[in-house]
Length: 103
Image 1 (cartoon, rainbow, N blue to C red):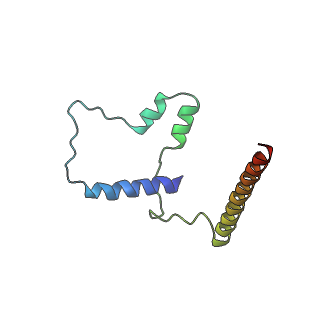
Image 2: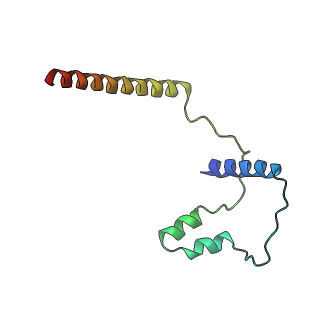
Image 3: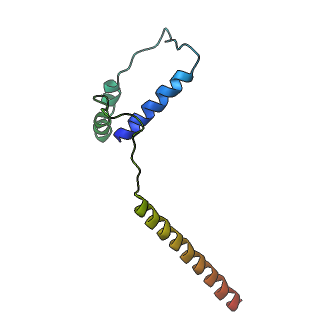
């Protein structure tokens, strides 16, 4: 989950550099802290909100997300997926052949 927050921060930061307007705080605005938002909930909601608070910046650089699969794992996953698709197609064709024989 740390990688997700780092990546989101990186994207928002880079996107913010492209913006050409000057943000202004409305006169009637009220500052709200993250702890105050977490405390408004109760029970599990409050517990999960407090657990997800960012306590310090990450030490790793943004966009250093590793690959979810090694090449052999990805190939194995692809072959298994392809075999499953072929099996379902075979079942479908068998069903329609049996259906035509009955009809």
